[in-house]
Length: 356
Image 1 (cartoon, helix red, strand yellow):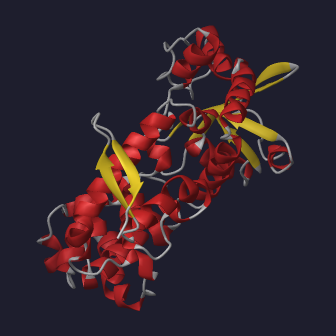
Image 2 (tube, rainbow, N blue to C red):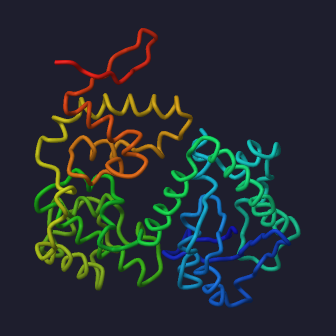
Image 3 (tube, rainbow, N blue to C red):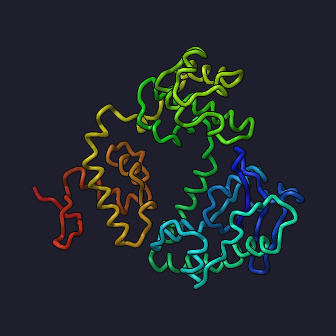
């Protein structure tokens, strides 16, 4: 299955086409003419849905059908376990089937009607061979002993995407917000949450409500009046009127009422600087390990995952599941002093037991 949608000017994706292929055929469904809500029963069944880079598609189905696929196999994620790094669908076709998909209609207007033959052909090609690719990936993953890893990652991604737009977690998508502390951290959480709800209410992108720069600047200045707000970087005339100004100032004022973050989300002052050397060293080893095992390094763990592992507390993705077996447990040995990283004489790092 695949979808075509637009969301450049809206908060929610506007679905324009649904493509579904099965062993006996292929169908293109026009959601501008057909009610999609009856698909909910099929999505929630034990049917396995094969999709590529399904993150935003999951949100499409939540919006159009009120639910998401119960079982999902994401071919982009799965390909990461055989050495491909977030491949496009075209690249995956080239790798597995020996041909690339045409790109001509990728950025076309899918909401226009009638759709052209070229558009229909392009849309159909996105799913025509997806089941064959799934079967090939399954065999490869099983041969490498990584099938359970890929299935677990698809389940984790599905759960993450279903809850991605929780307003309370909106601040996590703002890079600069992670470095704030104290009162500023509380304010950025409150303002980002208000912005997310406001964008959903009027169906516009969050950046059109308030840019990230302004959210962070407001958190740092904590304005209490419209005049204070006027002086904040990133705020302009649109943000000083009516419901917008009132909403921002109310969010700032109510920040102190928020529940404290879990312990793993609060970084003690200076702790990150102290751990920087360990994070850099572990990152180099993880990157090399992923390359040697032919796994997309991003799947193994991001720098944030490694920072969380080094800090401890069990909140890192590397503290459980296949990542713990592959990386978490060896790094625990390293951080406890029971192992050390050394060069093997050929420019490669290796983890070796440490004797005392």
